[in-house]
Amino acid sequence: MEYEAVIGLETHVQLKTRSKMWCGCPNEFGSPPNTNVCPVCLGMPGVLPVANEEALRLTVLTGYLLNCEIPRFAKFDRKNYFYPDSAKNYQLTQYDRPSTANGWVEFEFDGSPTGVERVRITRAHLEEDVGKNNHFDRHSGVDFNRAGVPLLEIVSEPDLKGPDMAYAYLKALTDILARANVSDCDLEKGMVRCDVNVSVRPRGSEKLGAKIEIKNMNSFSGVRRALEYEIPRQIEAVMRGEALRQETRRWDDVAGITEPMRSKEDAHDYRYFPEPDLMPFAPTDEWLAEVRTRVPELPRARKLRLMRDFGLPDGDAQVLTDNLPLGQFFEAAATGYRHPKSVANWVINNLPAKLAETSTSLGDLKFPATALRDLVDLVESGKISSKIAQDVFAEMFATGMAPAAIVDQKGLAQVSDSGAIEALAAQVIAANPGPAADFKAGKAAALNFLKGQLMKLSKGKANPAMAGEVLERLLKA
Image 1: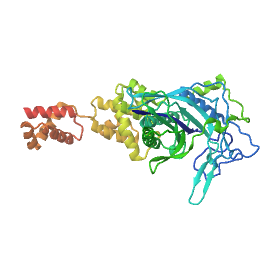
Image 2: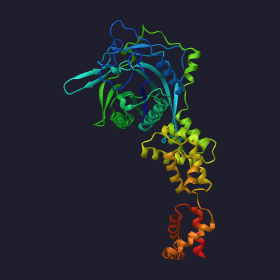
Image 3: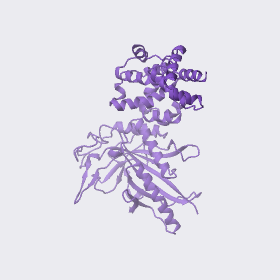
Image 4: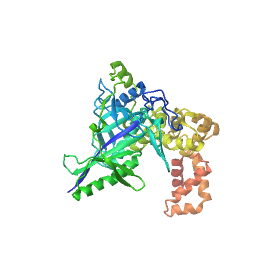
């Protein structure tokens, strides 16, 4: 019997706010332990939370980004559990009335017959992060700097079919959130963490198997590797006749295995009840309209537009989508221009290389984006060769001068006069009798050598196409 995996992900994303969810403590990474704390963070008796409005905005913005419904009534709940990293012994979250629900994400995936997959989003609800346990050689400690940081939990439906698809979904999801400035999505700073729910069942069956949760994954590659281990483990267990039970496991990245932690809790184990110190959230039409204005063009939509409007191939459009500043520079140069692909070649290849070589940022360029269009025009019109264009570009980069001015000032215009090129060709043939004889004997490659000598003699100014034609005519004559 063949088995298939059924995977759902719970992705926790720290929101990009200046302060924490319920207090004015800074939301920042890297401070000394327990310095960004206050009585609210530490759950002291008698304190009252006050909701961070920007966190509420970013939650609803995420709902729009993920094609969710935005309910007109949401509330916060207490999720009760006892761990050292939770000073209050409960977490403020949204349980049965979240701020968003019923959405979906579309993303490119090579393993799909259509190249595109859609994963349904159950909800994206707002809650608070907990502290961080630090384990040392002989003791442990808790850093509460992270406690109370606004956290968005994005819950997918079990629509994912394998490790690679899960990886592609997480990448697409975080690209969307980062593009809209919902979160920096820096995995190294713990801004994105993931719980993986996976089960196996006979292929074609509608009934779900026992759900196994792999807790607190902090890298997308780790999620993929954990699933590559866990799915075969479950299939082998089922094929042996073993009854899998719902449980929580941890991923050991060094050993490359999952290990049992505890039996999986159900909702009643957390004893949810409405948070008595916070009013329900009931957004107005005006407030929602203001949040909607913050929805940007999303990565996949941008890529498709660049391919459609500028005729770019998939690879070029992907580069200009992934690097938004570079893509915006390209659009400023190529919009309304007849040779957008030529502009894209300069923007994707030459410009980043020069920026890296000189440790220059895109914002410090001395020439405007339209200057690249002018440079391409000089090449396309035949006024300069592509080789000379490299020299002109270097001068543009260094001085900010217009391409045409550089060509005129330095006398770099391409020689396209047939008489002048014929004179150069005659010199080259006379100076290189061996290759000339080789060409006449049928060795076509010898013409390239002679053409290179002509270009060298002309200091790169000769029209390359004319140089080849004239050489071939003289040699055959």
